[in-house]
Length: 149
Ligand SMILES: [Zn+2]
Ligand SMILES: [Zn+2]
Image 1 (cartoon, rainbow, N blue to C red):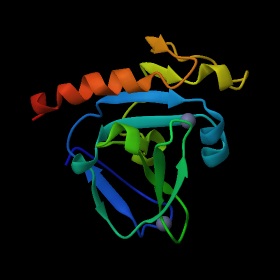
Image 2: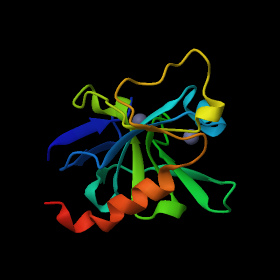
Image 3: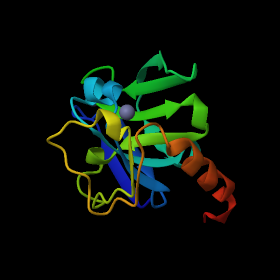
Image 4: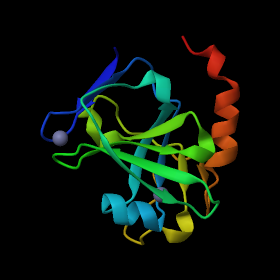
């Protein structure tokens, strides 16, 4: 396995074998509330993420009517991954969980209309959307899933 990480208390650990399909930031109000700041995320198909330990979960229903599931350690509360039903089977893993194994270089930023003023756009960003522009992009990636080792 190429990448690995764990929660604060160590009860939950994970690994995945391939580079993420996309690195992105989400500045939306929900991420600000859940993560205390802009979400820095790595996107990958769920079946590439191998988890040991049990997770608690909670979901919200987004503006699209689709659910967004948060999965976290029941003991220390560290978020391990989020799963938007809208983009099944894609999941988002917070980049900070990987202890620096990936130098976070986002190419996409979402919900810039809700971005806090003190957060600059990343120099690596190629596309920034005022709203949830990720849908089109992730659908493109899903069509290329079979190209992955
Ligand atoms: Zn934990
Ligand atoms: Zn968000």
